[in-house]
Image (tube, rainbow, N blue to C red; front, top):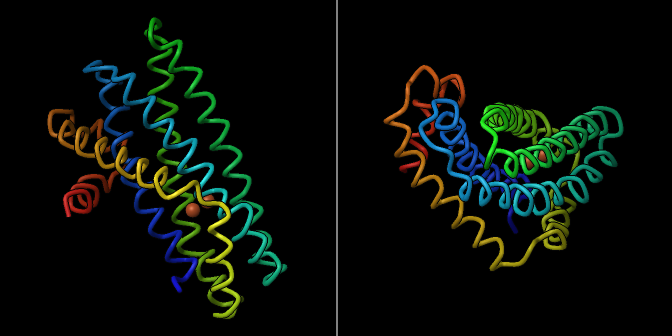
Length: 209
Ligand SMILES: [Fe+2]
Ligand SMILES: [Fe+2]
């Protein structure tokens, strides 16, 4: 039985690949190179279903309650902070969806959308770091192996269906393939600002591995 930490870590890897593609899209909008509205819509659909419903569903409804129960002090505090992040991400995604409609005709909305995409990618990366560096350790420390196996089984309730899950991963793969290649044509200092300073050292190597 796979450890629940490993299930979530695998999904984080897929999420980070989507964030890398979104970072390039944000840079392209900021540089005025292109406004790929269809692909932004595809990325937002992955955020709504794969990230918010499937991944955050597992955390909000199964993982956080389990760690809060096992570790009433530090576990509960961590889970509260991280659940609050999820609500903020949901609001940001809703704002990006509304902006995408306006950005079809309004240049100003495109600039705000690029900034929202940048904020989303930066905040989700930080959130993932806290989960992997602090929450996963708390789970290993406070929940014994048999109970952790039950969490993995309960994750299945939050799954969106094998085909839907696979389709979202394929969408992420195609966005990564399309946009990471575009990155070489963009201004490097802008990309570093939009995608994070470690973009070139980590994203390229992990994306093409
Ligand atoms: Fe989370
Ligand atoms: Fe997570």
